[in-house]
Image (cartoon, rainbow, N blue to C red):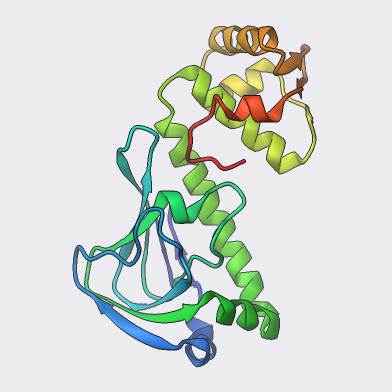
Length: 222
């Protein structure tokens, strides 16, 4: 069974390794500390990890690097160049923490792989969902103040629901962002004054998503 802990992912694609290898165009060995890509560089290669462990590093607003998660053998990363919430090419890089042997697959080959083998595509969706949930939590931790944490949460919830009317009480938001109800009330008041939201006892309506985004951590992408 795949071992999926909060910060470490491995063996998700072991059973598909032979198929994945048939779509790879080359292989590479990375020494400890070497990077597999760089911030803000086009990411046109997907990595399948045959052995070793690498870490995913995120760049925060302040230029600080934080470790988002670790991936071990049997990982395929990333399944696509840009996820829904995270601009991987701008804010993520991958660094070997042990010697890593990897298969390299052009993005176009991975797209063909998913079309030809839907079972692998479904596995990639499940894997990516777990990783994105973790990265969302890590991004929330990098917020520099309560307002930014609350705006991050509201923006992500709005994007996920695809609806401007969010069924969230102030207590819901406080609990999810580890803020106090007083902090949420103060942020809501500021956002109402800027005509970004309307709020009632158990609902909040996003009037201006673009302006709400301006208050968010820049790891989020609109």
